[in-house]
Image (cartoon, rainbow, N blue to C red; front, side, top):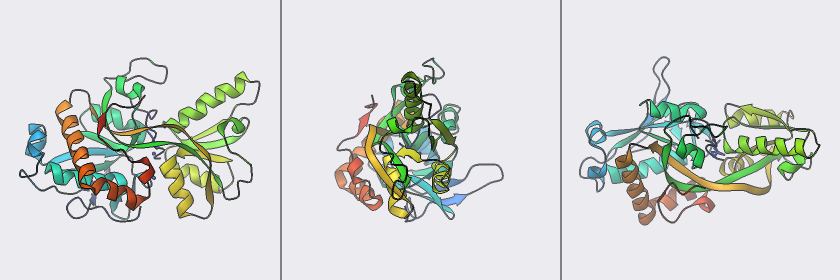
Length: 316
């Protein structure tokens, strides 16, 4: 969600600090939500068909299906979130723009961030687009202890973001850095890069003879902000786009300090799906060139995170 979100299935995974908005998504119209029993919510739009410039670059099975199945945790404004019966945000808008180049629709399915990679590897999705940070651990399929836990993924990187500190308006606890959080309660989204930053700082607090940070990790950044608003924690650490949007949208919060560990967000695909990966890279390059990429970023106020070219696996 600092991004954010987010190695194998968790989020340092993504800097979703995604856990990042108003405007409906239309991939050739509108992203329509469809819920079925215990199934996850889906958002879908259409491309322009086999005459699209990059249609033949796609894998044959996707050409035949006419759709790219996308896994996303739609609770990360302004990157992706649910607005009534639609999934909206920057990621769906970028998908809409790319669909015009690829000639197929993008079907968004809502899921839990730290389970997205596992779900893709089992065939539920073709692609993850969820403010996921491109990290070495994710690319190599490593778990939190650095041990091999999966095949890993490739990333097509499309935005840059770091983690930020969100506090209550007026910053009553005078928090400016994570170093000042020792002995305090802090919220974040579980499995994100921001979560990892807090884990590292907690170890440093102990090493320096100070009390550890009491980290409260939630399934969504929305829950973390509710906790902050109620005064249960002194700060919420999340991706800059998300934190900045929260501060802009509500009078309760403000962003303090500098961004931490800036890194690229990437569209994640399975290692063995290089044909799709390369087609997505070309589609991203095309929308950067024609200006629709910049237009989408401006709509959501995240121009500062824009990239000038499409790259694969450019994260540290």
